Image (cartoon, rainbow, N blue to C red; front, side, top):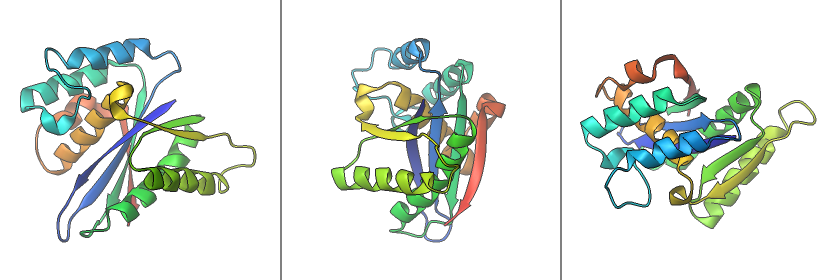
Length: 185
């Protein structure tokens, strides 16, 4: 099963969109516990990379690096202002191909607005037609606060974004656990 989250860097000419999938076996209870443990004493429903300081981000990246699983990331570039959804669609389409390649049959995405969620489902359905006949890939949406495994994807997306912005040592921490694919938008 794959859990997907995103990060976005807005810039007039050099924007980019990061879509990260954290892929875990169905029994991912240890990974959930690890993500819940990252909250520490904070009273928050959802862990979010952008709300952590540098020390917390390093700890979070190290925690994700210790989890069993693989992380696939698509990066859509360039992303002009106000074209974030177009970049998301291009990134999600490529991500579906890559997830199929590693045998994922269920994709959990963080819920947004109903129409945007329906658009995600339609895109995954349309992309599935380009995959081998009989390909099974189900997509569902869930609130980010309801599933700590989204937090792993958020951490990976945030770390990749930070790396592309020249901030932190997160790529070194996550190393070969992250497979990245560029997408032209």
